[in-house]
View 1 (tube, one colour):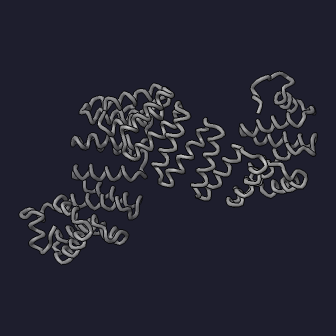
View 2 (cartoon, one colour; view 1 turned 180 degrees about the horizontal axis):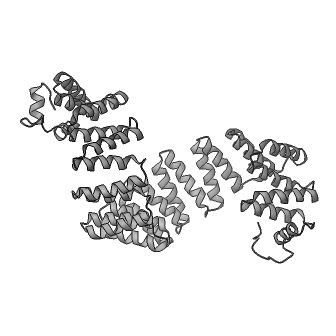
Length: 466
């Protein structure tokens, strides 16, 4: 399409058309000019103007197939599928080999969720056009809707063969490999593509992600470095490299990468947060706090920052400061269950029993019988020695998640703590059969039971073996 920002003289179609609308005069435009005008308005989302231009166009060119197809596009945008199909059927009687008719028919079928039928119609367009990137891409997308990722992948590969700079096709190919759990095939494909396109930063970046998923960190770092060599402004590669370095314990290098991302675009809360985490892991609490606060300023809604800074103080037993931050977080988002879990833990250490109960009740409201939440809530109650309530909580989880070692050990310890030895030993037997290696959790959660006996001695005494 011609660039409508160029040649903006009074004779240029768009300028003339808008002048016509202002003056109510009638100007003549040929069909190609109307195509430019209507397409422009659709591209910028001004559908009312596109509709108006189409109406005037039909008055001047009632038999133009080109304009009828544009009318179909407008009707599709407005979800008026029946009217669009009527126009296409009429066009088909006149031009049965016009591939655009089949392409628009496929769009209608896709909107009707008839994806297999859309594929069949698009293949007719493919037969007429031969190799066509738009048609290949549409077929691939329909196969994606059908969850036939092998065929979708094949068609996206055809797109890439026609245009090796098509980053969307490359991303979708890798998405298909990932969905099919074909990591090694994805790597082989990317290596072959890179042989032909050694400066494709997207390919190197995707290769790094594949190696990272396979925990081949050295190869992943090399791939991210090559992506940066191909494009030293590619923020995604710096970010992935930084995360990998951080997870590998190379905190200073990770910080340098995160700082580079801040130079490439506006400050991001994520980068500030992870710089703070790196400093924290290096034992430099001052810079860590500075960057945590910068993260909060950059995005006050990022829950990971509130949780991180709260845990920062919690781990140092500065419970009042931890409470201050988690309360501010809850004021911003009172439906975040992770905030309430941490709020409960902090208040337990501050011996604020009522607040702990409020928090646990809130957790239950927000996440009915969620496994992780149930375990966390139960453990908080156990630590607070509220065994009756802990038993009630874990029994609700037991109904939904039977035969789970984590739940069975807690049931065993709670029943034993409440002097219900028969029930306790029953659940202990189940727990050991499910996962004997998890047994030491009993000593951690119920130290009073093992005050005079080791776990092994307790088990031997009661006829069990680890």
